[in-house]
Image (cartoon, rainbow, N blue to C red):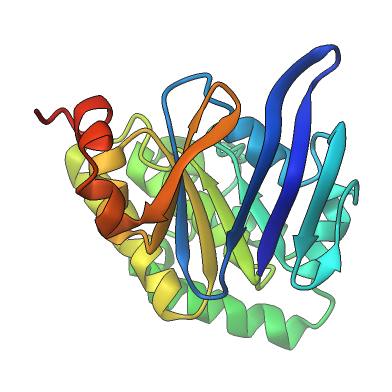
Length: 235
C-alpha cells in the first residue's frame, strides 16, 4: 500500500531524514517509533505532501506520489491526522465530520460513511451537536480520526494519537485503531508510547537521528534487548 525508497527530506537547509526506506502492507498496522527528534513526524509530513523530499521516492497504492499535493493525496485515499488534530473548536462534531468529506461529491456516499463512522464511534453520534471545543482530549481525538475517515481513505497516518490523553482515553483511542484495522484500513502510527503500540502493531520501524535503525515484527522488537532497554524500560 505504501513504500518509501531512500527518502531524504527536511526543512530548508536542515536535512532531517537520511535515506529512509520502509513499506506498509495493505490492511496492516505499521508503527514508526523513536524518541523526540528522531524524524517520525517529518516522515509523515513528507509522505502526505506537506514537505517535498530532497530525493528519493514515495509510492502509494502502486503509484509514484512523490511531490504530489496534499489535497490530491486525500482524493487518492491517503489521510494524515497530525498530533495537533487541527479541529474546528467552534463547530459541532457533525460539522467537523462534514469538513472531512469535502472531497466526496456523492451525497449518498457521505451519508453512508457518516453512519459507518458513528458505528465505530457511538459517542460521537450521541454528541453530534456538541461543540468540539467543549469535549475532552480523548473525544477530540476520536473526532479527528472520524473526520479523517469521512473521505473513505485506504491508508490513514496518525501522529502521536495518545499524546496528552488520560490512560482511559488512550485505551479508547487504541481500541478504535484496532477497529479500523478490522475494517481493512491500512494504518501507520507514529508514537512514543512504544509498549502499547507494539501490542497492536503488525510491524514496526525504529528511527534514530533521521534514519531507520531497526525493524521487525512487533513480537521481534518486543523481545529485542536493545528495544527493551531503550524504549520499554526493561533490564
